[in-house]
Length: 510
Image 1 (cartoon, rainbow, N blue to C red):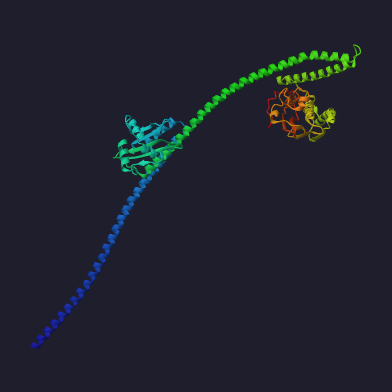
Image 2 (image 1 turned 30 degrees about the vertical axis):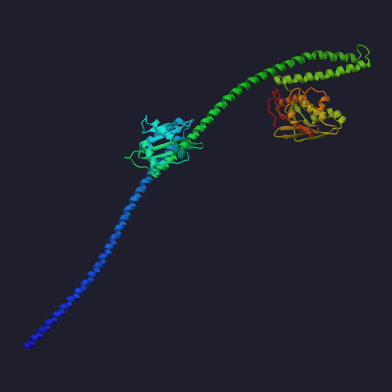
């Protein structure tokens, strides 16, 4: 019995040990799970903290992006407004209209409570041109205080822009108090000559603050205003100068027209006088020449040799006077438009050959060589042959007179587009530029030794030029002193048989 009890106790103890062991194992297992759960919880807390930090960063980034978007939108709106204002003020050159448009644009576009544009006059005094949000009685005080602030003006002169976000505190407080604002931008209006004014915009403390974009916007606007005002003032100066110039040109034109009329009247009077005198001289000259011829013919008795020589001189001088009178009459008719040409077909080569034969004795006397180069393509020309011959006679005779012994006279002619260009050249003493300018004047003779020893009227070249112009041509001269002279003139191949001689007003080429 006693043994049975011991055995029972042993079994009970063993059972208890088994149960305790199981419980111990269960406790150990649960402890491991708890530790694992605790580790997981720690990881979860750490992940949650990371997520919280990221969420805060996202929120902050979103706020920054929203703020940046707002600033960007504001800048885009400001640039759009600036573009509209720039277009408005750049499409007029009237200074008063520029400020009228600026005032309307600032009132409706930029949305600042206070706007002020001040401009310097010629005496460097500031004047208000745009005033919005200020009482009229306060503006003179603001202008007076700004003009006294040399430091502010000097900084503006250097291109510095002041604003409530970049201005030193003392300066910011001064501007705040002066202009009655909390937020502001003050930018100089500059031109090539320096500062010409200032632009001010601002808001009170209960309104939106100033941003860097606002500062940049107003600075650009001030530059645009300066450029537009400079263009307008430059245009005004040019316009005034043009008006003054037009007035001077008008006065001078009237003076020239009056002088021209006077010259034309004088020229007409001269031509009429020359014509009348020439006609009056013709009759006595004809009588003198006739009586001289009768005496020389011996119809009134024998004439001694000494008397005959003097009669021959009378006859020669009479011929010279008749030629002079004929030249004067022709020039008079040409200038008055009463000279009619007799146009007919002429062969230029034949005409030049005839004149060469006529003047050959004079050329042989001085041993002058003749050179001729005539374009074979020149057809028969429509000319007044007798007048055309006078052109060549006068020019070649002039060349003979001024060409030294054993010199050369050349006559060249070329056809180009229905116009013949003729050149009569010599190897004579040449003509100075000063004398060339007057060579076609009536009665003008170059002051040289040849002209001092050879008599002449000074009408031959003037008459030749007028005859050329009668044929719708022109004449000019090229010359080098001591090398020779060339007379150039043009003659159209075709002429109308009813053309009258013109007034010779065409300008010769240089």
